[in-house]
Amino acid sequence: QQQSKELLVADVKNLDAEAEVRRLFGSAAVASANDNNVRIGGRKVPRHMIPKRLTLTRPKLTWPPLQHGPGVSVEEINVDKADAATRRLVHEDVTGGRWFAVEHSERFRTVQVGFLEAVVRNDADAIAGIVYHHPYHVDALLQLSEIIKQTGGDFSEAGALVERALYAFEQGFAPRLNIAAGAARVDFRRIESRSLFLALFRHMQFLARRGCWRTAFEVNKVLLSLDPAHDPFGALVTLDFHALKAAQYEYVERFAAQWAWAPVRMMPGWGFSRALAAFMLERRGLKRAPQQQQQQLHGKRSMELLVDAILTFPTAVPVLWAKANIDVDARVATLPYFDDPHVTSDDSAMTHMQLLVRLFVERSGALYRVPEVTRWLQEGLQRALTRIIETNGGPAAFAAHKERVQSAMCSYVVPENVSRHVLVADMDALKAGLPEHVRSAESYAFDPLPPADNIDPYSDFVGGMMNPLHLMMPGAFVDGAAAAAAAQGGEGEEDANILQRLLGLIRGRLGDVVLDDPGTSDEDEYESGSNDGNGGSGDEENAAPSGNGGNQV
View 1 (cartoon, rainbow, N blue to C red):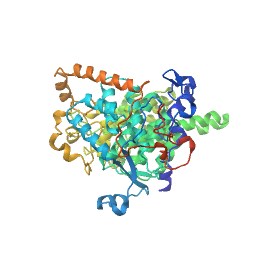
View 2 (spheres, rainbow, N blue to C red; view 1 turned 135 degrees about the horizontal axis):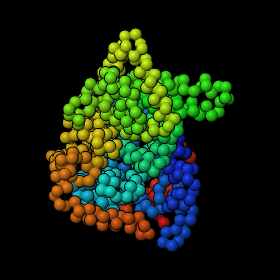
View 3 (cartoon, helix red, strand yellow; view 1 turned 90 degrees about the vertical axis):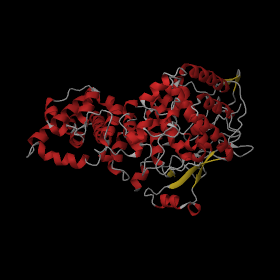
């Protein structure tokens, strides 16, 4: 258990994307609004007015000032005053963390009702208007970011909106909440809390798009740490990939060996990633080892892990080899051991294992196209085939092993967290493979696939207004037929023009003109310096900006 907890601790220094870009490409590559020579309105900004970064975010001078508080606070759950279900959640937690929940202020709830009304009406313009008037309303920021992304807008702008939402959350962190320590748990059942999970997931996606792999890896750990036992957004599905891209090979091996709260060895991605991590470590060792030791070191352990992954997840072989542009040995097609018995004429239906294989291959396939890795894969497959054919009993001897490993995963009962992960993973082709009840469920971009034990104080307001036909707004999850029907309505171009005009106003607000934020907190005045957004670590580097939001000039 202690080893699993240590795997969740994030390195605060590596949670800074701008620092990573500077390390990779030099200072000239970062056109930061926080640079020492930044000018606003033609005037140089004094150094003391440049806001310091928090644990997760680096606030920009061009962001609107946060004068009234974000309206969201992340407070520790008082178990003595909690309901029976919450007490059970805390007491049955095997991870030993400290539990928190996101709370909305009364003023925020008033704005939230207007936001939900705009979502139900499919009114993207109204959502953009909420962001204009309430620039730290977290749900509106997340929804607008998705609208911009799905309508072909500026990805950097969409990513900045997500980062601003995270900044709002950090300003509301309780003093005892250290988000990087790996011990903070957040109640996912509550709709208010789910926005924090989504903001971290979206932030991780935008970091990966920028090539900030180490930062994305650390954010991935933070996301998993919020609820490692249930992993509501499937952070485990991406953690091995981000670790490999960040060259954290030792971490992959440690995690696969020590993680106690989920069977990662039953996940194809982790099976192959562990082998690849061992291979990369061996290559690193070969460069440092004396010539006489290189032959002994070459490929021994990684090859064993690769053969084990191939034998454990044989149905992944044709898919991964095709993605990596490797010719599959002809014997694979003749051995039933590599067949997927669950392939049917209905291409849209996927089992739990098929979804995990596709998620792994779509993300990690490029890692296996490197010539050295390709040769290693080919050798591993040859050894696996030899073992299958030459073992006493032949392929039949391995059939029981395959059935034992995959029986629990080769089911059309897909876990809720995997379905939710597919919905937010930007892999539209896989959404059709989700169970019918997920595809037909009412789901919005700001709250994809609410859990079965959902706690939503706004449900009475929304009530029966949630109609599948209302899911046409960009940023909502709709099936292909519904999207096509909406496209034929003739209103898309006009709506896009209106949205672009509103986005222009928002961009203008983020420039030289500084307006007051009407606020979403219950406080008349807000001093962000009272909360360092760092769980009270006392680290000056991560202290919050002083004054009213730290970014008013």
